[in-house]
Image 1 (cartoon, rainbow, N blue to C red):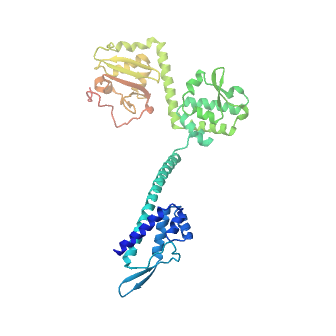
Image 2: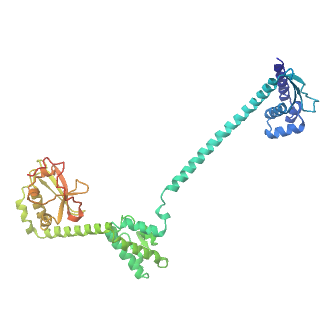
Image 3: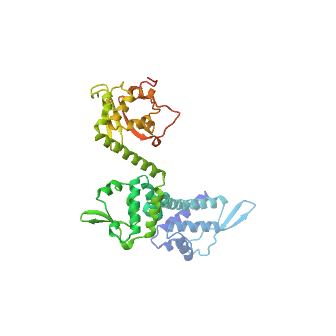
Length: 411
């Protein structure tokens, strides 16, 4: 009861001080604290009178002198302040639990206020941390992305560009001739200008990946001349070191597997085109047509055979399902008479493009020639192509057959 009365009196004094109309320092002085203590407390709490009062009360409670009597287990509480003109803490005999409860109540009030401020601060820090984390993550993603081609060194740009061009032999050969001409005769203006509107440029360099990048590395730039776009190289802006590097890299590209296989394919298509052209001007070579059965129309039960000679030359014809591979060979002979001999001798291969990579019809023997289109799986249609034998992947242990045919056994 005594501790409750003391706590009520202290609370009344605090409320009386807070309700006063005097300045902040006067609040604390009226509570019994010195001017210097009041100022220090207000500075420590950023001018918050309530926190300053709680801080001074805690300090007063913890620094008060006590006298303990061992006989009756009582404590005499004596104030440590000398200025008692306005407020003097009475000398009271009470149990140690009273001081502890008072200190605990005041400390909890101060802790509650500090926790609220700390919570608000954590929210702000969390927002700042999230923003910083997103920015850091974005920077890390950019850091791990491969550099753009224009951000690499000129040497790397040239090598990368040529590696993309080397599967296009005509582009490699054209660039090699053009850059070598500039190196040998840098003052000749006709070598320093490339007209992008010519058919030669369109056939060999246009839309080939890496060509534009390589020319830009060699310091060519685009200009409009009479509404025609051209690529020019200034005579006094030629970098011979880059020019030598580009020529050397292109020469190495001619030794690559991609260049050689593409070159072989181009030469093979050129040969096929010449055979087809020769056959057109020699209609007497079409004697094999008399051995072919009449071509069925689209309304009949038939198989549409599409035969690709080159990238731009494709012939089509309809056959009956019971026509044989030999009928296909005869038809090819009517288009270009030398081709059947190349196929039957296994120098060239007739491949089925339904497979990836294309699968050759091997071995070419009498048994294979008698197989029907239905047995071969070429009904109701198939896309065939003629390639050189070393241009296709062939497994010598695997005979030609596929799951599309109605029968696999020899006919």
